[in-house]
Image (cartoon, rainbow, N blue to C red; front, side):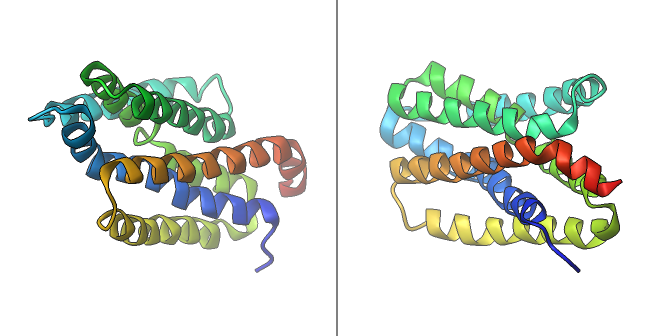
Length: 186
């Protein structure tokens, strides 16, 4: 199989987008306890779940009007901005808003959109590229969470910001190359 730079970028986005929501899901409550001083931040999980559920419906509707590939850039940008604001602001309302927004833009179907875009852009290797995106996602679950277990909550937030920023750069690259990729896939 011939892999293009774009297909490799999409596979890596499978890793970065998984990292964004997994690090938040598994580490944000510790950040809220240690950095915000919130004794019981478990309510954040409800907001995260609500964001995820609403996003699944709204994103499905939005993809009828907006090309799927645009979400690969826009949603990580939203996550990146949210995490920076949470890291700088460190308040309960920001943590609640952050949980909802990361649930929406990070966990609300972004990995599935990445897989869908891969299938559209690389129809000759769609089985292979889908498998590799999912393998990258699985590797992320293990490696990133293992690394996070050895870090302080604020360091995990910074790692998540860096990981998401890499996803933004890759998403920008894929979006800039999108027209050329569509032509090549035909």
